[in-house]
Length: 282
Image (cartoon, rainbow, N blue to C red):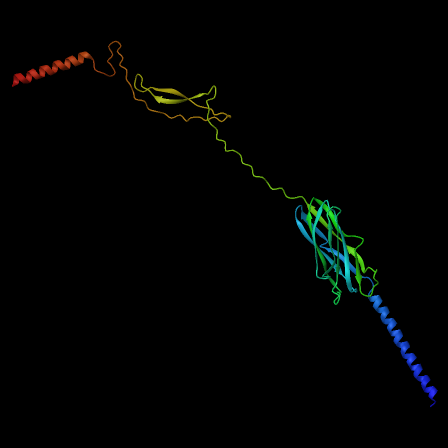
């Protein structure tokens, strides 16, 4: 075979192989670029929250890279400084390296921080970028959201390409604090009886003697009325009084009780006569 023909065949084969290899590499690069298209998302969780004034709450900043492999993320957070106070920002485990330290401004209601991946192990998938600790300041409903400067970087993308395609904030409802009831003590008032003007006496029956030995005379006992309108009424208690008989002489009627002088004289005379009789008999 002619030497020139052999050389021509070899050159043709090399060109054909190069063309096939070139087409394969171009297709492979296109697939990689398509796979590396921005698709990552950021969200603040939980999506809704309820706290009271003075309470603290932790919110998680979550990243899902979907098909991207991320190398870093720059976070900018916005909130209402009249209703919330941002106490601190702590890093998560998804991008553990802190490129720019947290900056918190509770006057304007803004905060920022930048995280990066381990150079040898850039992550793909879902994880927590940071934790935000807020404190409720005044009642109302407010939004914690991402600022417009928030962005992410990924492998296979340009230095200025943002791989974040969607950012979702969260809502916080702050309730007024529950008032603590203050115990009050009321004085234990005991009414003190006082003599009221025009108190009505309540009669208390007492036993007194009279003619015939059976009369009962009622002796009134006054009752007292305490100030304030509460009337204390004494319960009538019957008491027995010694009977005193007063002798009364009228006409030929005999005394009811007692001994008259003629009777005494007759008794003495009888005794003398008795003694004289006894003496004469002896």
